[in-house]
Figure (cartoon, rainbow, N blue to C red):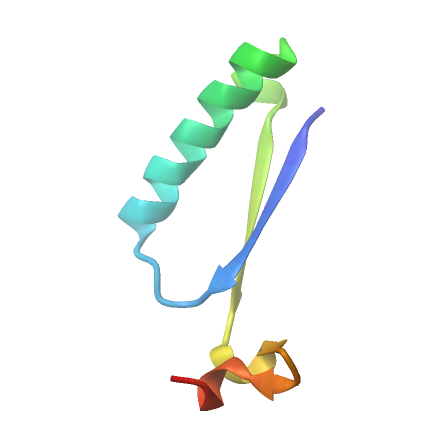
Length: 62
């Protein structure tokens, strides 16, 4: 059972998540030789204030 986790900044719409879920599922089914029913996708919507890069919070970067 493939499980894919997507970690990204919050703010994406349900439509965007659905489109991405379909694209990821199609790729995993084709390349990984599995089935759509066996493919799970988990979204982690993260606040920019909870993510740091290069020693700085992303919320403080431009």
